[in-house]
Image 1 (cartoon, helix red, strand yellow):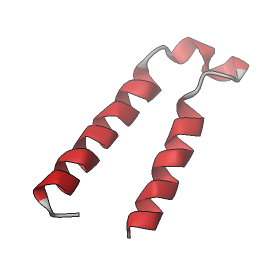
Image 2 (image 1 turned 60 degrees about the vertical axis):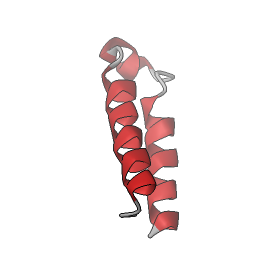
Image 3 (image 1 turned 120 degrees about the horizontal axis):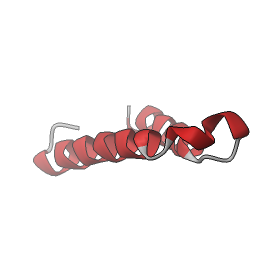
Image 4 (image 1 turned 30 degrees about the vertical axis):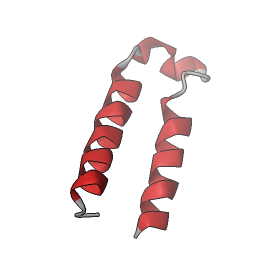
Length: 50
């Protein structure tokens, strides 16, 4: 389960980088969503539910 989550987070990190022309206008939306997901994962890990 942890390996799957790690792979998903790495893929989200790659997708949040505005390196392609079609994603330059997205602003902070992808990285903000990624930050929220990482925050939830950290809270779950600290609470012992993950």
